[in-house]
Image (tube, rainbow, N blue to C red; front, top):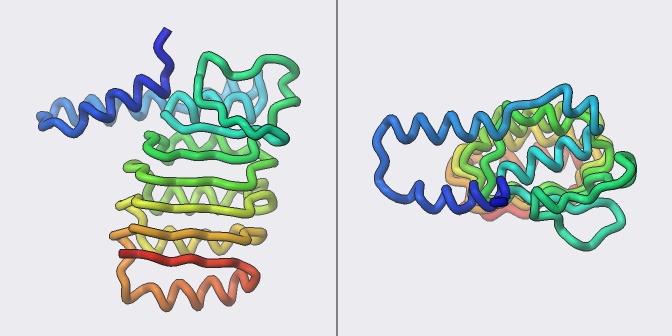
Length: 202
């Protein structure tokens, strides 16, 4: 059986071809389906399992606390006690995650690193929503945002709420203008003095 994540990655390759307006609506609808939050599922299997299913369905990968291997295969997600597998890291490279799915993250207590790379549906409201999640404010230590064209300085500044953040990489973000760079540096220096901030906005 073809995996959700692999299906999405293969379909993404087709998006490089010229599409009609109707086809673009189809892609928007399909990605919205992948991101739709199933609150009953969260209640039944717990936040980490439900979030894992959501992320892999959208083409992302996860790594669990105490493990080195990244989970990439939706059908091979580990079974066993629901409390055993806690998400420690999320790599959303080339995934279709979007803001409507971020309620899946609300119950995650152990996420230490998030990578958002070439995420075409990630916008400022996604970062604002993520920064408001109390459990992530406590647990998140590292974040990388790379080649996400819809992100502006407004979304980046919202990350100041992640009070335990120790490392932030921002690179290839055309929505963040070069003349905003110094302001970002100063804002983070005041809000998160221990943060290692790496900026390469070009």
